[in-house]
Length: 182
Image 1 (cartoon, rainbow, N blue to C red):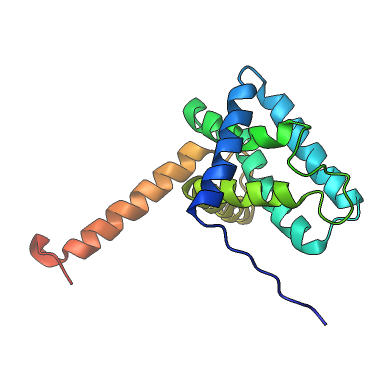
Image 2: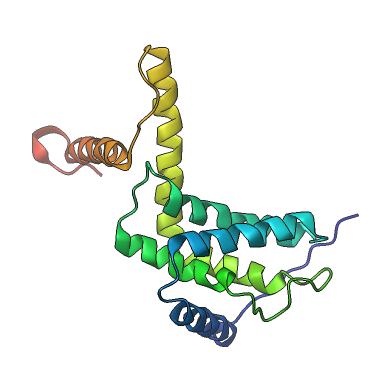
């Protein structure tokens, strides 16, 4: 029978973990994208092949979209946004953890907390990337059905599509004769 286990971090706890993230980020200046991505992927591999509890592994796997958004050639994340994501991932590129990863059962607990913080801080980026991935898949299917090349759907395609959607919504909200509809 499963047991539900929850804990809540207060503002002081969050400040403590954010301070650690900042120290790791500052310490990782000059470390390349490839190094941080490789370290993050190694963390996930270690967690998957070890005796990591399922609840921790499910949290750790939330880091995959963060890695994907900086490595996805179709997303083409601007450099300042790449740096923001890498700052969040820098914690995972440091072998010195609060809790050693090889500690049975709880070794990845500190990493799971950091993943939750990173996902919370990068929620808008994660949402945009998720929407882009859904758009890319829909567009790939549409192109296949139309007999066109399904590859090469880019962020600029997605942004243009979203811009058109938003403009249409804006016009619909204005309604007839430019009056705002409630």
